[in-house]
Amino acid sequence: MDLETFTLLPLHLDPASKSLSCPRHSSAQITTELTELNTLHRLLLNVTDSPLGSNIPPPPVPLNPKRGAQIAKMREQANTLMRRARREDAEEAV
Picture 1 (cartoon, rainbow, N blue to C red):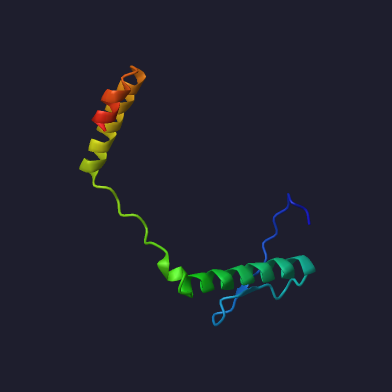
Picture 2: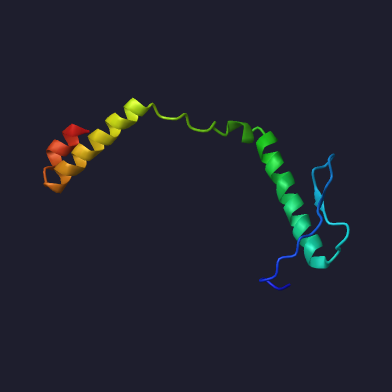
């Protein structure tokens, strides 16, 4: 297959199984790629449905802007002191 040519393929999504297929173009390479993609999709669904998958933490909570500003100020003070070779003062600033 030519890597510089884009060919739009009519993909079909099965509503029941959520698997992709390409009924009009049945080449071995397309079939293999879609089979691998469908397998990966099923594996990812199993990871989140398993008991181990339920231990995935939620996304991080956004940081309060005031707290973020305080952290940035402390970081800048510590970096300034470190540049001046005042390591003890930099550790106290944090």
